[in-house]
Structures are given as structure tokens and as C-alpha cells.
Length: 163
Image 1 (cartoon, rainbow, N blue to C red):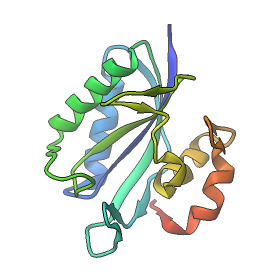
Image 2: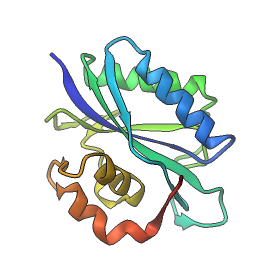
Image 3: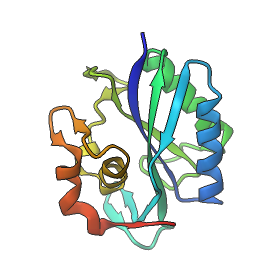
């Protein structure tokens, strides 16, 4: 069975755009993943455990729509492989990174486990997820929260469109 999934992709270290494009190619070449479509990229201040930190390098983010025959945990494993191949090092929670890919939604699945929560537990608060997602899929709905475009509207000033 094929599922539609939404992924958030971003990074704030190194050659951000080059890394994101490379990660998109890696996703598209992963067996079990097809129809990889990415939103326009947005830039935002870093969000840390303490909150927004404008002194850290800015993030470049996008949202990716995919179709996949993988199960959610298999998709997570492939995402972690791609992150690692792009120099991702996990030193601190919410720390700076070359690449971060999160599963935001996975079909209509609702899941809470130690390693994976779907929908992503903070997606409804994140301008860098909601704003590009609304650009990619104007009619999208975040399960349990409502229309993505409506959730994104009051947060638009927290991100900047990158051309």
C-alpha cells in the first residue's frame, strides 16, 4: 500500500541549499519512495531548547511531499541514513546541524512511540514547517489541528522566502 507523507527538511550548517538538494535526490533514489515534491525554501532563525536564537546560523527549510510503500519506521530509518550521509551529528537536542529531516504526517496514521510521533508533535507551532507546507499543498490538513494554510497565516512573519 502506498502512503502520502509530509517531511520537513532543513539545516543551518555548511552549504545549506546544496545539502538540501542532495538530500532530496537521496530521498528520490530511495527504494519505496517516489513523487518527491519540495516546497519553496524559507529561512528562519534557529529554534533551540531555550527558544529562538538569532545569534545562531539561520536555517534553510522546506517541506517535502512523498509517496511511499515503506512503513513509518522504515521511512524513519531511511531518513536517518540520509541525514548521516550528509554529516548529521547528534550532539545536543535542537542543536545546529547540516541536515534535519522529520516525518510530519504519514497517511492518516496517528502514532506515539519512543522514537516516532505522528503527526509531528510541534508541527502546529512551527512557521518553518507550516508556511512552506501551505505553499506546497494549499488545501493540506494537519490531523488534530486543522487547515495548514490557516495555521500558517499568523506565523508568516517568522520566515523569509528564499529565491
